[in-house]
Length: 512
Image (tube, rainbow, N blue to C red):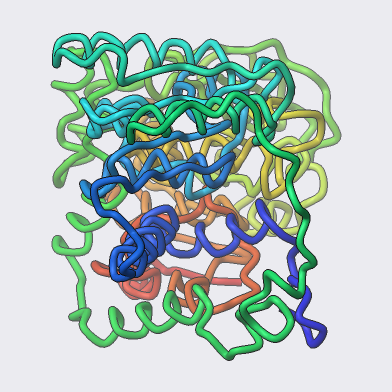
């Protein structure tokens, strides 16, 4: 908060994302922290004489519906639950291009085969009512699907009436229709007469409800989420031992889930490139090069007069767009057996950077006779998504965040997938005899390039522009700027970027 106790980043989504994204680096999850607050609140309630532990319900709407859902799965002492305006299915949210807050995206949840309904199923056969809305952005179809799954479970347990679905007629919010449905359901669960309608509420003044002098806990000098994240980052740094060589390579493979990317290849490719998941010779890397398409050449204002565009299939249905610059027209496959090449991994757009980026001109001038390639990894440049609304790519709640959050739920960090794109492009180049690569990158592209450079023997020189100093610098900076798509969950328990940079000292690393 600022000096006037007002939130620096606004309330709600922006605050949640900024604190929650950062926590992933130290292996924490914002949703778990908020759930713990709920558990401790329950501890307090049960300490009071007037609270009957046999009748303790939990309800909430939107973010409160999120916490109600997670807490139904985490805490056995609830006797009934009523999550509002949250429960749907992960599939509906994904297909509807609906971003969700960090605390609504549990890491590995999709990899474990879980959905919203599974957290509520942990309550069975205790009473649960799903409160949905007809015009909510949380798709009511998903709420209905969740209800039907639960209905089957409750029926098998002999309590089909203990699960219900209420669909209010309006938009997102805990409206009177849903509140009254909750009252009736909870009253029935505890054996009280039903409430047909909500009495006229008395709206209290803010001052009456505030339990701090001005309604903000910040003025009590309580600790922020960031302070815990920063502290844990420093603790992990103190515990980490120096890591290099094969230990570092294995840590990168593990934390960036390289094996999951390899498993997505066809069976034949997976056999031939299994060496990517452990040390591999250049020959092994070139045994199963990715398939590729040669795209129609288009004149651009690039540093060389001609360019050939290739769509390299790094895994089934996933293409990395690679542009080769040339002095003469070239409409076919890349040159054969030339040995050395330069591969540039773009920040956000190879096309734009080929036109405007000074580093590219410097690389070309330094090695004028060496083949030059520029690469867009998945989700940037030519494959930049247009989901989640117009011009939302770099917004905190935009498409880059949307795909990064889903990648974490799938246990395939986005930056790990992008690293895999770079490795496959390197393998593709090696298949043409280009096995001595000067790997260069800028900004966002420096992270997948760094990890790939540590793993790939074909990389003999590395140049990074505007690279991140360390993940610890993000975890310990309250005003960090890097996106979730750049983060590796739990990375600071194993290694940090300076370990990679030291390793790349043997490959003529330059950071500019």
